[in-house]
Amino acid sequence: MKKNLNCRRMLGILFFAWLSCLTVAGVLEAKAELKPGLAILPLFVGKPDEMERGVVCPICKGLFASGEVMAGSQNILTRLIHQKMQGLGTFNLLPAEKVEDALSRREMKRFEEKLIPNSIELGKELSADFILVGFVFRFVERIGSSLGVERPASVGFDIHLFRVRDGKMIWNGGFDETQKPLSDNLLKIGSFIKGKASWLTAEELAGLGMDGMLKKLPGAKVLEEAP
Image (tube, rainbow, N blue to C red):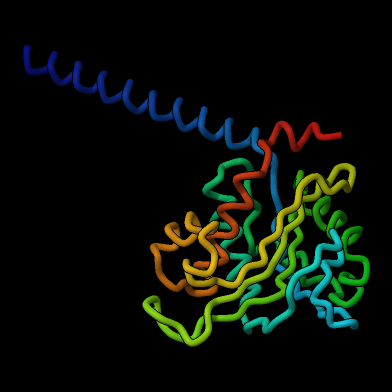
């Protein structure tokens, strides 16, 4: 009899533990649903200015130093943005495959000719609240190792966040940096230390740049209510 009573108590405990897990999962799912949806477009490659002043962003008109854009760098930067945005926790990110599939059904030349209107239209098709559009202007890999280089990594890119419901750009950030020895610029000692006092790869340098940019990204409520 006592053994049966203990079994019932154990089953009761397990039942309430299972019920609690379901409740917590439901709360977490509800919180996730409250986050605005973000579609991240694969980055585009910026084209050098005819006057060779550098590369001008076609969206915000920011000027970036021109240089080599290593093959595949758009994919590296797009993946980094996904990772950083995911870690930030501000948005529900639409799967990259879903965004790329929707983009593949469009003629890219016409899409890029009217980039913003087409991006907003794509965001609406995906039922996203925000869409992120960015460019890579320079992605030069280091030649050497973390201990010493013949050529340091050099990266230039920017990203722009648009609110889909009204097509307004509500935030943007840019990064344009070539790693230099600490002795060349003591003002950047913080960045050098974050890079573990070593020569970074282009991806590592871009990751540091994104970290700094995203610290300035407002919260979801501010982004949704911005005039």
